Picture (cartoon, rainbow, N blue to C red):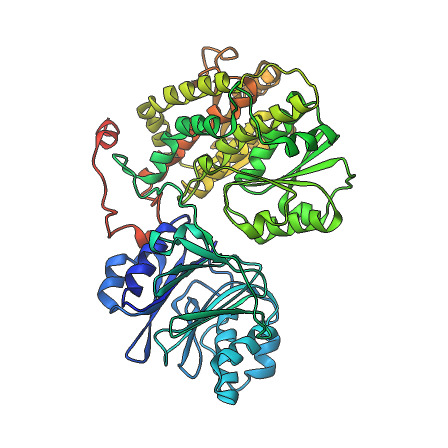
Length: 614
């Protein structure tokens, strides 16, 4: 995921604003980062590969300015070398731009208009920068040239352009990729995510596809790509609890993991009525009363949570339920009727495909329910109904509550679906969530034991881990593999138990490390049969079992919770082990490495650090 932050204002605080806003966007391990500021009529660019880009260096090398742009990204065009990093500069030296997305006709534009230009990179961003410069030489009208270039490009994009002749101007456009404009007093903060905004820019405009923003002399106007004025509403920004307030925890991620019991209680406070029943309003109840089939759509942790949600809807509401990755739903949509309810999960960030899935439902007249923690009006505008829940909102390199919060929220929604359809399924949400919160607390108290497991994984000669589960446990296997892969950088895979058993001769070899999940009696016979089969080989294995189905040889036993909430409690120890493994492997678990030091991010020594020294 790439991020953009741009500031223009009367006061020379651009450097401070850009750096602080990028810190609020510290939710991924970017491989590149760059900034550009205008000083004395010149563009001053700084580009760094991730691990050498620190806040201190940025502060030392760049003077303050009234306008600046920052960008972080995963490289999608060209290798992550300095010349390929954003911002990119026009050949005339007047313009610098950053871009999120992909210009699909960049080669055609380069061949048609820019054959005379010597390129320094193979990026589509540089093509757009040169294109703007080329048109300005013809017309000497910056905004007209910007619009002309935007009209020519195809694909998805969020673009910010500044030019050296004006320290109080900026040009912005978007299609497909999100972009917001925070409005301050004599200043503007443009960003790809609302959470980058600060309290000084608490009013925001969400740009829509085809919108172009013109800021000149600190006055703004909105047009379409043809220069015709458009009107967009200004709305207040709902500021989520900032993860910068990490208290006595050494890392934000550990704080998020540890606060999951409280998030369950916040779900109850937000969505449970006075008699203890979850309630999302009469319209949603009516939709479930009419529905005869559910289609769950998501990606990443949301997709994994949807796998658990399938079991919840089928048991609690007796509704046939299918699960689709967002990309597959968009490309090969299933056959649906007017009684099919599509539930789109976007709990760990919305992508262009998320919007496209909702747009497809809207265009075909299909009823959709968006479940999200994203404030985007453009996202919810395409959904028939929206359930927004900030209580499971989190930030960080990997989001601790995206999966667990989504599974909990889906259980509440499934309960509403069942009640709406007259299905009697005994599930007291406040009681079961309270039991679950207590169980999570008990797992968190075992941090020292779990750190020893992390040492065991880090010391592996062949650090490949296979997570295996069936039914609800398969959702845990997938999410656990994601954590070990993305956070701790292990080679990890997830397998449905039956498929794994079919290929057991391939997987059960010396050096293989297998982790089996068992949280319900229904799967016990098959898991134990697989365990016996593994014992006959030279593979190493661990069984994570729940109380009631455990055996004396099981290496880790989970506190007992309701079977439909088992994926949540099963994820907590895996989150902690992945976290500790990442720390042991010196992986920055919170921020992109270019924010690993500086501006208040020095390590915090506290009781966690002391207890972990055992």
